Length: 393
Ligand SMILES: Cc1ncc(COP(=O)(O)O)c(C=O)c1O
Image (cartoon, rainbow, N blue to C red; front, side, top):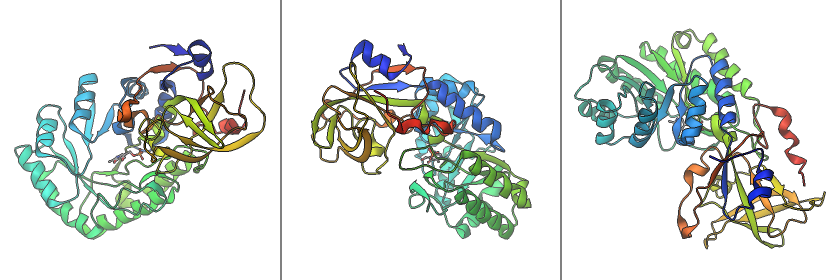
């Protein structure tokens, strides 16, 4: 794959006509190393956030060989790359065929569920295997998250206690898992969920082997600057040590976004300007889904092949290339006031749920990918890169 020192250098050498996914695998490695060194337990990478092999390899090379999967194709991908790795199938609702193949073909032993019906499905599909590790998904408040997952998955504390008593006789290890919602802006979400887990353990009288605190660890965006990641890990460590029934358990986490957001950006070109609207060649049906309805404001860096930008900045909204009005990114994206057709924009933090969600809608699809060796526009792992506001020419 082609390597460039920066998106600017890519523009100067190639003036790409289509959007380009700019990978920074080293940044995924840096994030994975951070979690591996500081999280008080086991880290499983949530593959859905970015299943590119360059990214998976960089996380694996940081010493993480546990992966959270949500589908059989993710199991196949991981098993094909790292046959000895540990796969946990934590999607609470699975087809019988995928449970069967995950167990018999890809060696998966860890499964999540949030109902007795799903438990029966898992037991039948694995021929009543005796080496299963089962996790009950607890629904927890997602109040501080940008993406709420608790309406779709999870059982109430009373139901979790009941399901735990059903899985105890048929599982080797048992656990509770939860998800505080993606891009969770408050560390307190993790401590309140853990307190609920403590209450369930005490009232059920069952001994749990594992508590899986899920994903939700945030990345940083211009309109969403969370507390430092240390605050999240400290909160989890403190609560674990304070509640004896939790302290006895192994702790797992399944970060996705926080590991890979900085692992890619997208280079786009401005094809038209109408006042404060820039029409660019990628959009919400491409790698910028989160900038659409979810309203994320991605960090941006303007690039002009020749000549300088004005030092004055203006707020812009963006339109993607398709014919759909939903292909709109409100922003505001702060860029030089003299942006014009032919200018490029590096859009940061598209490593998580970005390039992975591209569609072929209207025929606009670009899989051109390069590797960049410079630092991301914004970082959770290098707070001084808040210099994103100082746009360069
Ligand atoms: C079960 C599970 N684990 C982990 C994740 C990763 O979450 P995040 O990217 O917010 O860290 C998700 C995301 O949807 C999930 O559903």
